[in-house]
Amino acid sequence: MSNRQTKTDVILIGAGIMSATLGSLLKELVPDWEITVLERRAIAGEESSNEWNNAGTGHSSLCELNYTVEKPDRSIDISKAVKVNEEFQDSKQFWSYLVNSSLIRNPQDFIMPVPHMSFVQGEQDVTFLKKRFEALSGNPLFQGMEFSDDPGKLKEWIPLMMKDRTVDKPIAATRIESGTDVNFGALTRLLFDHLKSKNVDIKFKHNVDDITRTSDGSWELKVRNVDSGTVERHTAKFVFIGGGGGSLHLLQKSGIPEGKGIGGFPVSGLFMVCRKPDVVAQHRAKVYGKAAIGAPPMSVPHLDTRVIDKKESLFFGPFAGFSPKFLKFGSMLDLLTSVKSHNLVTMMAAGVKNVPLTTYLIKQVMLSKEKRMEALREFVPNAKSDDWELLVAGQRVQIIKDTAAGKGTLQFGTEVISAADGSIAALLGASPGASTAVSVMLEVIKKCFPQHIKAWEPKLKEMIPSYGVSLLKNPELIQEIHTSTERALGLAGKKQANPEPKNRMVKEA
Image 1 (cartoon, one colour):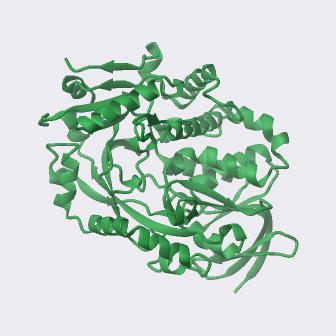
Image 2: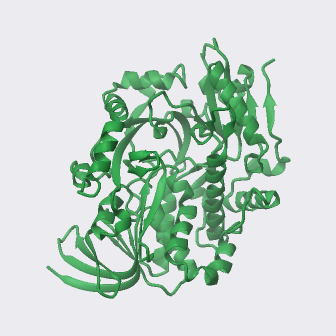
Image 3: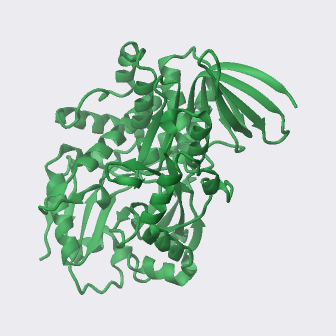
């Protein structure tokens, strides 16, 4: 067994979209810093970032109904929708910078324009959708959204979903053309190709077994070569733990007090996939509905056009499920070994609180294909079982922690946990995840390198023109960003020839 020692400035654990994004940002800000990436799989982006493990939605709140909540006074709170949309604008600006700088050559390799829609049935949900549309319409971030409760108009928008549908109750949808389908797996691999060309040392099949603090304040990682079993020691001044569901165990190994009392709740996902060209050709949109009562937010049903390897397919789901694994390629002992003395009470409280959720997830696991087809037929009434196959998606680990809402509260979202001195940071949680990678990694940079921010600001503004600026207070900047990112990322298409569409409502005749 070797004990080779390597010193570097930055270590990124996990070769997913988060590490790829942070590495790419740092290489632009400080090109001379040495960066090492450690990934236990054989290639980049094999877990949550992989294109077959997520829905590929460029999450910008254009269609996700759970980002707009109805308040007790019946008004619609759009604050989360605005925040997520602004964060996605950061991502599009940085990707545009990479394309304009020739660091990524062909944006069509990872991003395509696909309309985003919300679809509801029943008087109560139609009323909610109309109020949501009205609340978003006055906001420049949602320019171009249309609403219709006219079945004839919906047949134009979503012919596959309207074919053979019995319209015996109110029905409505919103549609906005500026939505996107993002291949996060392809983007992750493109970014790592770019980092490799910048002399970043990317070590695949290298597993981080332990993390300890050294006397000089650096971090020493015990790293095992998965193939040979040899052990190496890697030290760095800064470590980022971007290992998806595997991040919690590594955070616990670091021993930082900020990581105490935090647990994880794993949720697996399944999609129904259709690759039949004659069916796929009848639908081009990402259409989100409302989650069933008792279902977790990550189980909002949606029917998505996906573009993977230049081929279109349709995804429907996700069907949630339960597995104790924290990663798709993880261990059945992951959940058990994440329980420590400092988070035991929190985890027990979460277990008591979430019995209905656990029951729901187990029932989802037990669903037959025909039961899943019944759920799909709520979206596609004439869906045939032979046209659809089951696909196992990635694992998600939701954060469990004590909050003002009580002990053992399940968190839906992403969170950066960092040491007080900024020497180590970990990313935990799930959706909207990859879509907001740039915004989340800017948060890591601010938290962990505060002494450099002032010097880095000009470059940050070059890469992300809206950096440090409220888009809502600068509507003219929103229009500039929409125009420049659509051009750089090849998203304008036919829209470039048309005037900007007005927010409009199409009423039933």
